[in-house]
Image (cartoon, rainbow, N blue to C red; front, side):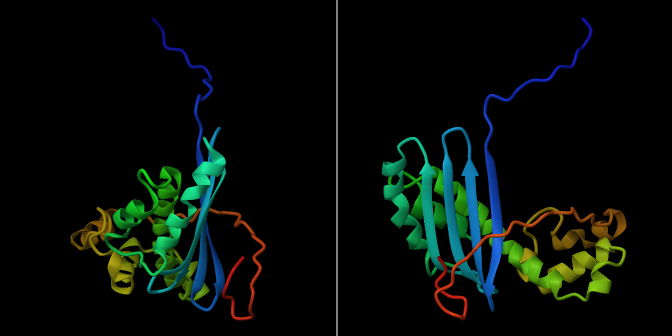
Length: 199
């Protein structure tokens, strides 16, 4: 029997998005949402870099299985205030916002927020490199060493950032290809001129 190809429509689709907005100085807003046929769930934290301490946290179920009941779990996310995104954060944070007394979807978004928070180290690291050097041809081995020395928390976190693979990266990794992105814009109201108390 010959193989054929045909278009097949998905029967379920979920999108997630995470954005980081600078609020001034070393404070950032990390906003995440997920949407599917039933859910429209939003969560956001304000975080200080480089400590990655959470100084404010909010969530909202704009649509869900029982929207107004689901939103009763909102105070759980406020338990993240004072926590730092570091080893062990994800498990502790999910216990605070998920489970029987919480919201699984907000819990999912907290994981996305934590991963994005760690990207702040990269964003700040690479933005500090002079433009002409950033735009020069990429040297994977040099970049690997540079990241491991500048962002020690990345050391041994995955296969590629294992410090024992520096030689492998230098020998076989292909140059980094940056993907063009159009960055979202969000109107943010500040209650003071220093960038605190975001609404």
